[in-house]
Amino acid sequence: MKQSSLLAHLRSHAAVTVTVGEWEIVARVGTLEDDYAAIRHRAGAIDLSHRTMLRVTGNDRVKFLQGIISNDASVLTPGRGLYATILTSKGKMQTDITVFALKDAAIWVDAEPEVAEKLLRLLIRYTIGTDAKIESVSGRYGLLGVYGPNAAITIESVLPGGRLPTAALGVVEFMWRDHPAVVVESGYPGTPGYRILLPADALPAAWSAIVGSDGGSPVKAVGMDALEAVRIEAGVPRFGSDMSEENFPPEARIEDRALSYTKGCYMGQETIARIKTYGHVNRLLVGLLPDTDRPIAHGTALYHPDVTSVLREHKEAGYVTSSIVSPALKRVIALGYVHHTLATPGTVVSVGSENPIPATVVSLPFVSTP
Image (cartoon, rainbow, N blue to C red):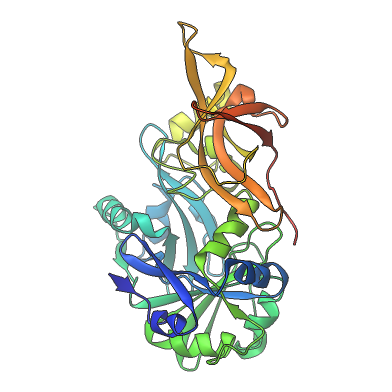
């Protein structure tokens, strides 16, 4: 089981851990309520070293990415980041990624932990015949996240010169105590946030500078459960939960962030162009307010009387992807897919086939400001 160099320290501060892929990570530090309040009202620091971190180098690095990702990699000059997907030839998602252009002729690729091995193999396969090289830096580098209204002032207090990226997915590079470091913008709607990439051996010192070795800093150590609550309240889909290899990007409503309709050819581009030009996807990601006090299990089917089979039999109208008890709304919320004809806010669907409960389709995000 892989562990961050911070795990032992966080355990000594009442951290509760869970397993994600090959990693043991922190779910919460103390209570979920306290973790969430820190992110929403002050600042919360979180160890994200379990995320997939790859490095792309070589003279063809941008050209290489341009041929395989769904967004326009030609904008990748040092200091800029880009969100994109990698598609199959049929236009369905293999994964989503965020790429950040660095000064040393390199590109940092950030992705969900569950796709680590798959993404590395995928990118290496596509480098054949190009002057581009892919390597994993997971384990050699650590990743810290700082989220909340005080995130910027917190990070600026420990940065040389206090410089932070100002644009969405912007990048700032600097030396921190003789270690190369990168800060990127990575907030959610209504919740500012940044990620800090550092060599793994610098991680404990950076954590102490931000949080304090005794936990006495106004910045609280938090776990993934609180950040997940913020993500779902913001209506931001996560690959592995709300997006999978069965989804087209427009189904997840990420086309504005992840797709370019003007760049040259890339794998899956023809299907995406046809969807835009001639039709629509059959299902769409929506927010749901279920009439229950318990979160809905991932994959639970949704039904509606207007969606039937050709034999007029009861047929699934969609399914739930993520669900929590929202700390902000004090009620259960969910993300899920419904047939495109049911995506209008106010539509009521049924959750489950046995003892079904009603759920109302709502616009996203659920919560956009603290």
